[in-house]
Image 1: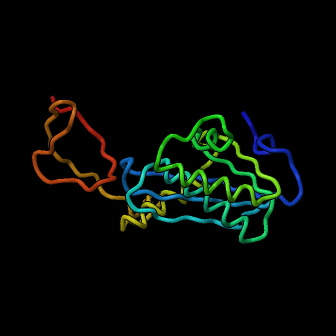
Image 2: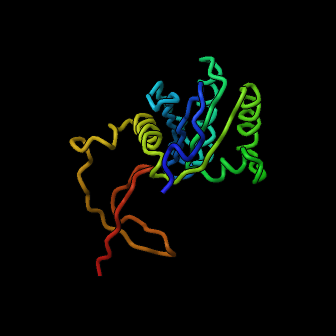
Length: 190
């Protein structure tokens, strides 16, 4: 198991931004979250924003752009980014090409901002190593969708039973409707 210390060598004046973005529906209600720490691991900032109806990859890049903007605006010239988007990390490192017309302007802007820093590193981690950024991204999506944060068990929605029929691999509700971006649990009747 890789510890945080092994992700990047310790060095003075570095800040580390844990970035995440998400979309409920892809495209769907989207948001990003960024948790920023100093070289000693102390939190120095948390950023998040609701983006409207966007893709997951758009949200991931938006988190990276927010981290870069924070570093530049606050005089931090050494930035380490930790993200769970393998696609974005490999694109920024030049290992994958950016073919998406939606992502190309975001990628280009990220590269412009990176060039303004003295030093930049980016590392892919599994989702479990990015919990703070994930929490912030989900809070941004909840806020944008008019929901209370999902992390609050007292405000969790009560389960609701609805009936539907599967036709062509798609579930068609027999009554009522569900809003975009809602997660459901399906139980087979018979």
